[in-house]
Image (cartoon, rainbow, N blue to C red):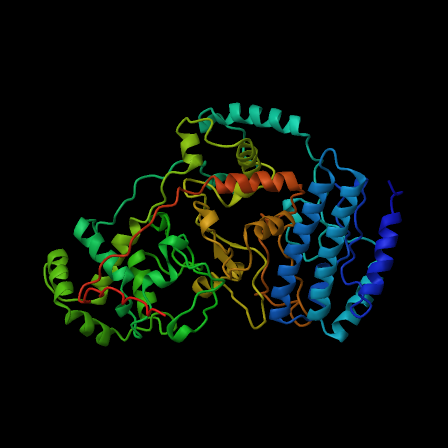
Length: 524
């Protein structure tokens, strides 16, 4: 095997010739076999990005490149550390890693302007010593570039099995006897242990009846509720897409692209503050806002209600549910809210494990459950039956003072501490509700990699140093030091929260003629 550093020198020489037009923008030497658990180099483009005056589009693309790069590093470490890896296979693994790093550099080279590349080289030369940050909660949101914690050594397959067996025995006990979760002091007073979902409670002002829920279902799927007659509630909350829409951000009236990702409606009955920023206090209020919002369903209320009052099938159902046939927006909202409260996720493998089926979770998922509650610190925000604290946190994705700025909860409360804070989403059925974050930036691997790195920490730009509204990342976010094995186990646990797929058929809508059978295709 080559001496440590020899391959790195050969790689960098070849790499520098290949990328002469771009320079080497990511300082990423290819690790040797003995370095597979070392931390990545401290000085990389994302450590200095906030000093390069990137545009919003550049910053979004850089976040995507970073997630891809971190996955490449994780894949390299996993593959190169596998048992019985021959020298030839090691060479192929390194070449594949080099190709992926080359691709990242090319993407960055195309992303930056010549002036930005020159500025980065100046900053990198000036940063002769690594910039470090401890993992304590007290300085978890300091405005400094962070060096990820070195990942823990990988366990052997035998040790993994032993650990899984020990954890399975621990977690097969009642939750009151589970290991203590790793929690910030600020979280402990309101922490609720993971558990099964409770029964849905319906408000006295809008009690449940089968007829009301069925009427709400029809209205939920009916595009005639929008001004254009083309957008239904189901357009952004499609059952087969996890009651979301699978898009980075949703579209509204006239196919206008909105600025936030469509959150799932699963288990929405257990959410107190609706929307990503919590601006609606009830489902009824949420429905009324979406229907009347000019950027979303764009309903002219009088026109749309007149439209529905001319459909006898609907007026008959409204009379049955509400006592009189009038179709009004408050009644529409009450019916749809009743239907939405019934959108509850079905039992999954984790629920089965909680009910006593100790083999319902794989070894990987058992280890992931323990990581979730301890070293990965997920339970600080994702706890309770829905795996959400229902609170609002800043994850460092505010884009403050830029084109894509979104101040989140601040729009509702006007409190400086809420700038850039968004509601913690449920993790139930998470494998079917991609993409993730309020702006739909990441897939599941990207989310895990970003949390492992502690999420972005943004420093004020010139002129923002004394800005009282400059967003501060949540103190709960810290570099985690999880290795690739840990991330795979954590992902396995998250996937165990997904229910067995079942189809929700759209209802037959009142006032529409039954579609005729499709014509036979022309024969050649």
